[in-house]
Length: 90
Length: 119
Image (cartoon, rainbow over all chains, first blue to last red):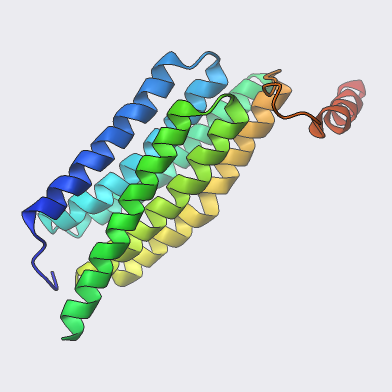
């Protein structure tokens, strides 16, 4: 890393992103219709991609960036398939 | 000197990204109907994850090409999935809440749907 990041900044990042994940999960659980659940799932996967990127910096492993890329691709395909299912059935 | 400047620029970018991810999740949780939620959950989180990737790419030496590729990929695919979900749920019969007063999509969309059903 180029600089040493203070521990307080790490703590703020992890706390804020965990709160965001909990909020998106709540929407995915309590959503009134199935479409609301899909929207919650989509947002949750995007937030999780950002979380993988921060984890890659935290553990300083380049491989975890590849994990984030694969996660983004799989969540994109999954949301497309679910949208197709909502529209007319598979 | 250059390391310090780029590193703190990266810290600022990652902080902005994390804040926007939180705003997107808050919009998902608080907004009244599906289309408002979709807008908040797509635009804010796209900015958040792109800013986070670029910031991490600046913070670590040599990670910038892959992080930029990840950012470009998310920038391309996130609106596509959002559009697919919005169109599918409108066709599946989810109505916007009464605050969206002129529902411009309704008549046009209805005619397109009937034409495709007739074939």
